Length: 152
View (cartoon, rainbow, N blue to C red):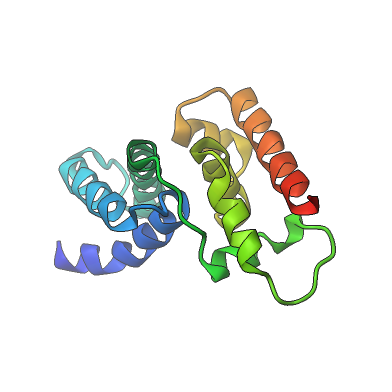
């Protein structure tokens, strides 16, 4: 169990910090606990990262909704989202971090899963337990909100 914990904790931490920035430590703890509770249900040990991602996203979204407070995103997360912005200089400002933090949890979640994790709409829909069309519309609205707020 210790080896598994060492293997997945950095991944879980990165996801939780992106989705639940107001309380990433709580999201990591809840995700790891839920993961270990459900470990017996893992059918394919080879798919451990996909399974951990599903558990982590569910728990991080739950924690983010519960905490409600928003905090700025980390600079490395912002750098990965750079292609959503119109042409900007190499230095991304605090304003961008604040902009990302103001996005609703649902929008921030789909942006993180798409832009940082590289997941497609079908996979995101399965992870979030919503229809694929819902994911597409959330992603479209998230990108649009991000761009509009940036140009203001």
